[in-house]
Amino acid sequence: MTDTKTRIEVRPFESLGAANHGWLDAHHHFSFADYYDPACMNWGAIRVWNDDIIQPQSGFPPHPHADMEIVTYVRTGAITHKDSLGNEGRTEAGDVQVMSAGSGIRHAEYNLENEATTLFQIWIMPNRTGGSPSWGAKPFPKDSRTGAWQVLASGMEGDSDALPIRTNARVVGATIKAGESLSYEVGAGRSAYLVPATGAIEIDGHHANARDGVAIKEGHITVKAIEDAEIVLVDSE
Image 1: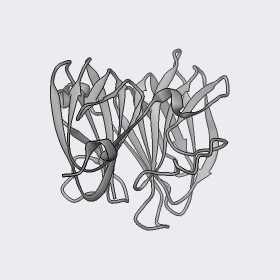
Image 2: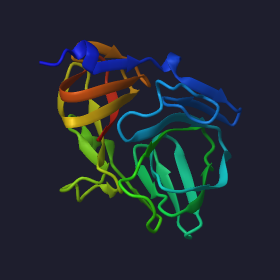
Image 3: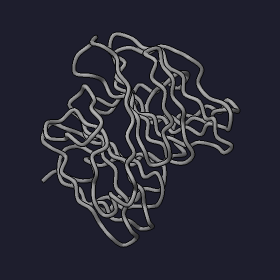
Image 4: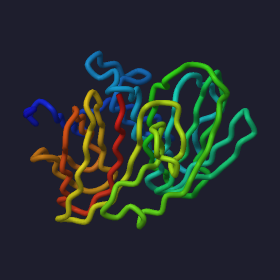
């Protein structure tokens, strides 16, 4: 049996890379922009997991991406998307948008609300480079994932209700009531990264607070909510 002391690593929020630009307060689970840590370049196919607070009436002006699957999970507020393909959309708290950058796309993401928007932006490396870029969004009511994992975005066979991504990975979410537990199986040769958006949890005896990162190697895990918790997990090769 694999020792959970070496299979599960908690990365406290306070230890993450950070940059406060005024309009944007960003925390980086992995090396990004001016934050560089050779020990935290990626986890499996996950290249970026940014925890962003975007102030009202501000945001990211148009900029390019290529060859990356970019998943945005909105925690509070809303984000408004525009891109070079002519797509426009507003994604609200609890909902998800996905951009497959493919051969290249320019996009802008703005908080046009009168309150701060908080979100996770997750970049996952694709199975293949190139291809036509695309964008999509979908509502995922939180009550539909109370006490159960819901697949939000996936490139895995059988996940037809999820937003599609071009990688052998799965993004799942759950809400867990205090005192209740959920199990998850990380398959052989795979890894997972889990972040509580809210609430404190324990994973096989390892404590994690809201916005901490938990890096998990293959095997079975049990997530117990110490407080009511909202969870996002990415399972990848």
